Image (tube, rainbow, N blue to C red; front, side, top):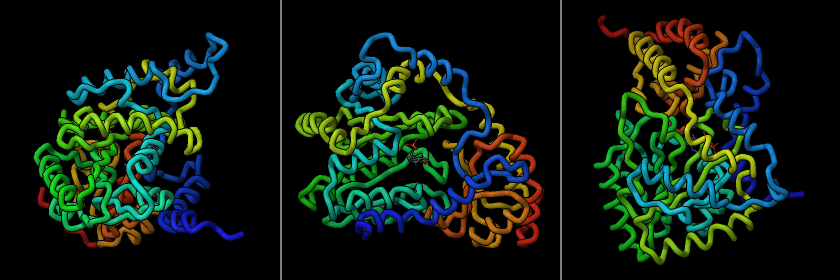
Length: 397
Ligand SMILES: Cc1ncc(COP(=O)(O)O)c(C=O)c1O
């Protein structure tokens, strides 16, 4: 039997990542493997998460495990929390509960996108976007971020927009760079999207991928694009802040500044579309747990310690690291200039990182700071050694 074109295209666009993921899974639990690859937990789950799940699994009514769509209580909780966090008047009806950010992105693409529509993605970027677009019969179009700072390059986005562009996708705090975009960058983007919409005679939407919104360092402020551009859809996941990506929970939220006609039609279309996509609501237990989960977070102080340790050690050894303002990743130019060769050299020492090629930047690499401090410490000697062998000049002390 022949594969559908859609499935074939989705597979090709994500093959590098799925191959790597499978090979890392085959090494799970090996003590000699220092795994700095994916944002997975390396320590026992947060107690607050476990307590919330325990309480939520206990049935209190006959319909506890009946079909659940986007339930009223979690939507209200999310709307209230979002309003406080982003300073915008979200209502429960603006919030659609989904299976993580993955589910929310898939929903957003199909709410406003049609087959053949183009989606502009600033690069480097999370590797899953292109294959998710292919599975929706949509077309990824890459636009570069600023080469040194990885800030938004609004002119590059403008150049990437065509008459077929339907969505521009922005991810802040950004995976893999750790950048949090500033209000002036987002306002400049909003102006470009407004002009492009009038030029095209068709709305260009903004999809704001914000699963790392609550993981920020040094009090870095967060501005959602939803505050700058009314035609914004926000997707969120609890998987990052709870460090439990296997428990699928997230949402898609409409910017409350959206004109009422569009806001109403998206609100009304979401439920039938989620049904049509395969009942893509989160499980009942996850929805009951939302109020309790809103108050649980990974240990940001410990994460900051790991970031600071890694940052200082790598910068001291001459690495050109981007200082993360958010997320739990660290992004750096690869010593020697080739992310694949660098990752392979480290793997010889049992240290695993992701080559920047997976993110569209082959000269870089990414590490995940969800590894333990012990792993960070044990990985550093190999990282410093590989840099020294690549002839990276160390900065003066
Ligand atoms: C930028 C970005 N968006 C979306 C997701 C998907 O998140 P989830 O698996 O929690 O749905 C991820 C996960 O790594 C991500 O890094």
